[in-house]
Image 1 (tube, chains in turn yellow, red):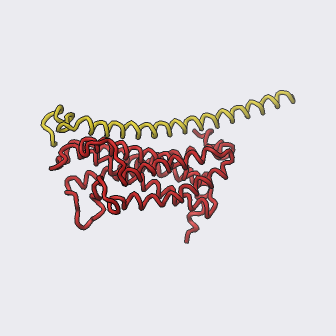
Image 2 (tube, one colour):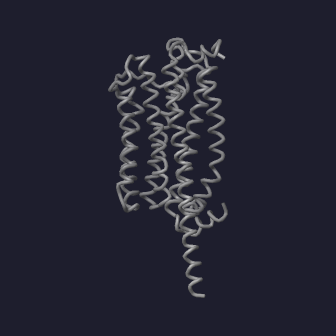
Image 3 (cartoon, rainbow over the protein chains, first blue to last red):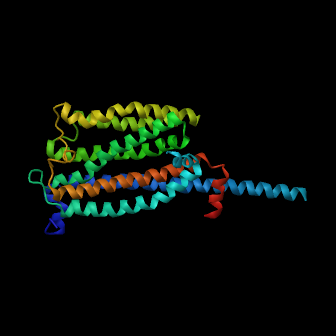
Length: 67
Length: 245
């Protein structure tokens, strides 16, 4: 450990603002693209399921009409 | 010799491959990123000149390397897409582009936050910085070109061509610090024989580079899966997928 205390660690020898600004924006951007990509997966799968369910219902309705 | 590759041209096989690879990339990302950040921020020694501000290197260099690495992969996928007309390769181009753009943005932002205390300016129109900014515009250009076309076949072709043309920017970025007299410092780790960086800083940097590369891989795989699903959503194998899960 290079720092004596937690406040020293935050201060980064006076460069705290720049170091944490860098690491903070980096974390935000990485998390942002990761979460938005995972959210896309969920959205696409939901729309596929919706479409499949709809086709299923149409099929059922047609069958009921016949009988 | 290349026959083993052929099945992966099929969308469902490519999708399965993504699923198989994903957990490995994810685990490497998490492990290396935690180790790399803690090591770089708290345990690596301070620089004798730049003191603790140099710790930005542990994200600046990995993101800059990966911004170019991702672009190379995107260009290779673009060549494959154009020459062999493989749709999966086209999808890979579009899956990589946003991730590469994020890496480039991180390299630029962390560079600015490092430049302010060291050079006294957030931004200078220096060769390295300007060519990296052009890289960001190339990524955004590839993406917007793709989304500008209604016909996705034409879109994939146009985006691939732009991606390939943009490769000219990569050597310019790499050699900019040698060709022009600039404010940006020279390479720290490319000269492996005469190491310009001490092992106590070199190893945490390596871990962070691996972490960033694995992250780019992870998100690219997720996005490639999305692109495949989106393109194939009316196919039976996607329907099967829904039923199972």
